[in-house]
Amino acid sequence: MISLKSETTVQGVNGDQIIHFMLHCNDQRYHNWWPEAHFRFHTISAKEGYVGSLVYFDEMVGKRRLKFKAVIVSYLPGQSVKWQMKFGILLPASVTLDCQETSAGLQITHILRAGFNGAGRVLDPFIRLYLSRKFEAALNEHAQYEFQKLSELLQQSS
Image (cartoon, rainbow, N blue to C red; front, side):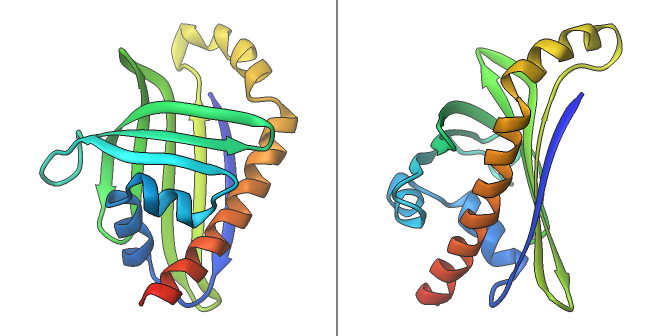
């Protein structure tokens, strides 16, 4: 299992605001968040309580364009949301967003996990070719910047 983790602390917002934004995002709000990197993000099919909802992401991370569908597989109000990638079937890849209030502000942890447990682990080196150290650095830089921008956007709209 490969895990790429980014952490950042932002001021002036709370976990409810961040998670709510992600759960109720649409293409226009997503694009306004970071026009140069965020193209589309919207719900394809919504489920009551969010778990099971299908969403679509389209964004640039560094020089790589990422387009995928994902299912919300877990949700804790104001604390976390986890999407599992889907391409016909659920894939062994997920993105988790965790929010925790600290004395320094809101700590946001973004985790991309991909890979297998058990015997399937033999395929992880091939996944690592795609999720290279260069991509890992680009993803960390992306997450640091985007959540600072989201904090500013949410403060302006409140």
